[in-house]
Image 1 (spheres, rainbow, N blue to C red):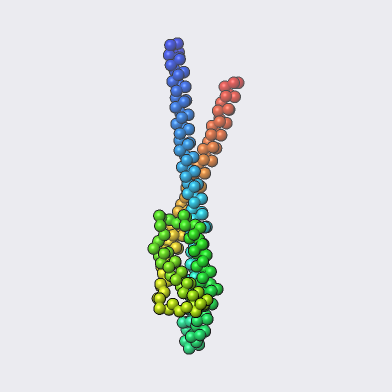
Image 2 (cartoon, rainbow, N blue to C red):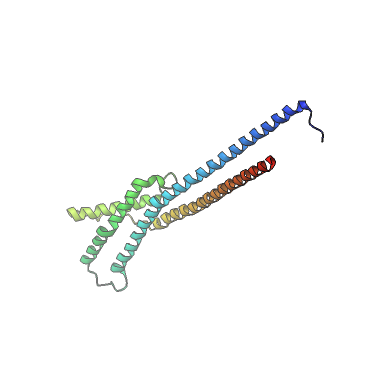
Length: 218
């Protein structure tokens, strides 16, 4: 085998060093890109966790309770067998009971969530149905309290119908957040497994390199 000319040896050494440096920079760049991508996924997962646990989850749960209690109230007032059994006076008492014990406290909790966690909603503004809901329950409460505390009759002002589509709107928001959460969690899990695999490969390479060095030193 013919040895390389002496004047080429420095160039070969320089080229080897250059390839090593370039390889290090490329590896470092790719590693940084992977880390940044993983960190972005982690931030999204944490945001979605908060969005589900602090906004859409509690909001949907409260609205679901409103729907359930409304069904109970309807059964007492309008359900089968109730005809003729509930006097106008008792009817007023039943409505007042449900408002005071269930509806108003539930609506107040919803209002508190909107005050404290509005930044977790998807999009730049709330769906129009939420504004309709707030107007409906706010007017209902004010009119009920004016009559109860001061006997001021405001029945001339028609109430704003409760938006039944609120339930499906909030449920859709919750479902969308949960789907995105599952998707990003899967990506994060894949990234974690990939990172562990790379670490394992590096350890095996390092181990093999040590074994080669030992063999060469013998």
